[in-house]
Image (cartoon, rainbow, N blue to C red; front, side, top):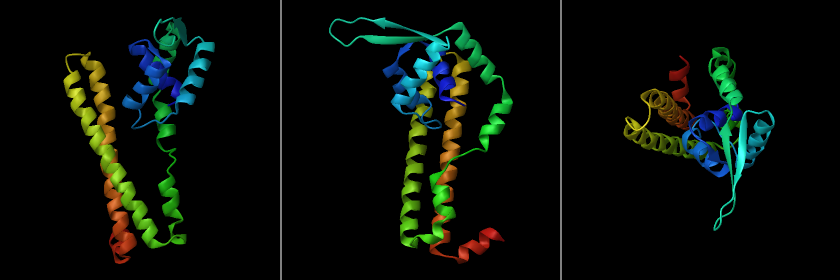
Length: 191
């Protein structure tokens, strides 16, 4: 996936300002794709040059002027083409960047108490992600009937992914703590 496709997908629902896009991106896609506001604005400028979206300036009296983005037919076509290519997922599914995995790989260089504290913090963060995804799941329950069921169905798939993956990371962190604190646990896992 690219940031471009995430933005096209959101604009496919409705026109938005850059601020609204940033907020919605983090609210809906943030559990599986991270982007900084400056990345979003830079990408919007590039997409407009590629005729994937248009923008119009809206003058406001008591507030700053707004720039509202809308997807073009070319943008819709590119979004549909991207969604329809299953081989893209296969290439990106295994390409993952994880700082904690890198730290664990070289963990023998660190003090075990530091590693355990890192793992506990990681586990807490994962538990928080589960909690946040569960809140989104409840919100989606209220969306049934307010939005087309086809949209809600696919939104629910991403929330389900977030919940399952976050729970799996929590479980991994728990087992990792056990192994670091008690080397005998390692034998049970490796045998």
